[in-house]
Length: 286
Image (cartoon, rainbow, N blue to C red):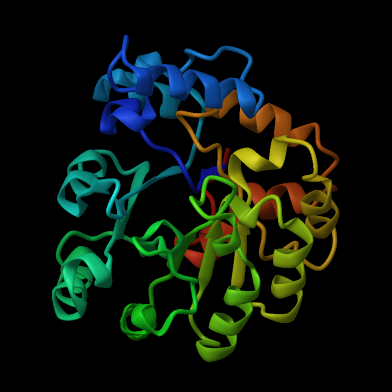
């Protein structure tokens, strides 16, 4: 079975992921692990080192693991850092990040071009709802980033979900307006706008360039509609992510297989949709 994990980061990347045992951030990482159903809330400790992270990824049998950058006022995971993590292992792919508010528009665009063309990152993450002030995903301040991603033919990845500081900015309607404005741009929604599941499914029903990655929220109460949509109209737009280090990779694959996805949908969600989106070619024989 081939699997592409669309959201998978090592704990050593940042204190937010549990990089420093004995700290409040480490305990918060353990808390979030319990909250999303991890059976062992310190499962991520092997990835406190690069070697341990690679062992976790390879032990899970992933074809690819996508390591995601971040650029917000509260947390910056530099693109060079992401490239360093993924550079020496072909299983790892990196997503860069920019923030045109923090960096300024032209510096953000210059960094976007460098991240894709020089560093070889596969797309760009933006997090309007985590800005200061928070903005909706269709805020025109981000349009130059979307235009640049469309011109470079790479996806834009948008952070959503219940951890948005102001929940009103976790609004799937903005994605509908964005998809309408950029109909050829692949728009990938991390955390699947949970708990606004019906809203993002309605947007994805209307716009085939919208991809939904519920990742760890696929395994919590209220997520059943993702599964039903994945067995129907969303089969080619739903993507798998473990959200490691907040959920074990292997457990997440096993839990996914127990959710009731039908034959065909399993392969599509675990691998084929991501392979098509990222232009990776056919899966290797297993």
